[in-house]
Image (cartoon, rainbow, N blue to C red):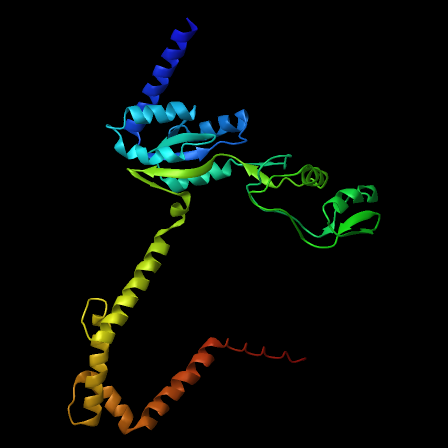
Length: 304
């Protein structure tokens, strides 16, 4: 009886996973380490209507994908990343917006003994608020201190734990006494499946402005190469036209050849003083217009 119920549950799980794979074109593979049940419930509430979060054994997820690889061949790219404590977040929404939502639901957590540090942990210099009898904790970690105003003062900024290191008992105890909660736990984006393409979360950091900057840098390189080898392209055309105009203007200035755009330059070369006289009143008028008018003096009253 138990075996039948187990098989029925697995069949329903596979059916649900297949329905999500059919309905949603995007999947966010998320790590769920150290996420509590209450925190997970809050995340599911925020995802309602925007995506479906599916958790389960990795072996079941991989088996379902492999058994249906003919219908979903692109999902094979995701198989190497389904390791550890992970879940699948299926969605049709913007991936950047969903990642921001997940980041908003990360909670502060203390450093527990044996945990792997997801970030670097630093202790700032200054007063610790601890009494002098706690000096041995700092000495065990070779942290320079002194007694100031009846409490322990840390002399330097300390890089206590590096990312990827295991938290020791002394580090965990010291951070607890200092009331420092260095870690944040929540759903961490591990990998992205997007319409058949699989890529890392760092790709989501590439915004439109970054793409535009890269494109314009490429256009500038094409224009420079085209000008250097005298090969006309769309990128170099504006520069070539400007260069040609300068050459024509130089010819017009040194000969009797004339055209409307060259008249002002020729007039300036013939009589530069005329432009200096015309520019002086305009330059003087600008500060005068900006200065506020002085108030008129009030008439004095005569005593009769």
